[in-house]
Image 1 (cartoon, rainbow, N blue to C red):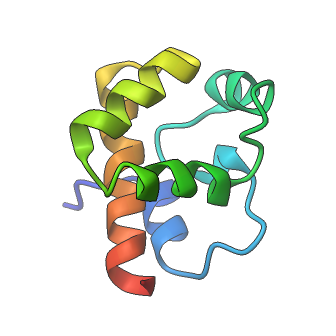
Image 2: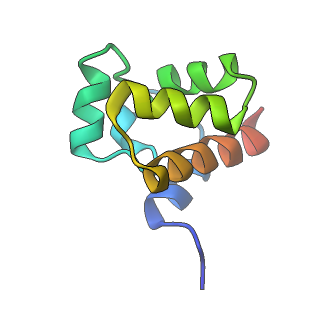
Length: 90
């Protein structure tokens, strides 16, 4: 049994392009709206923050909690999604 969601697998399986922020694992409609309201409307804008934090899990998950109120599971899902995407595409 896979430990990642279908959303996660779909995201990490292809280039990011112009995907909306809600395509990231752990980011649903509510958190997505909060991020969009702060100009993080595309997945690549969140990836930018992830890279600015040098892929540091603690810094990124704290930022995600501060920006949109993501809980620890949502933070971890989003972090893992971006980490695996970077491992595949960068």
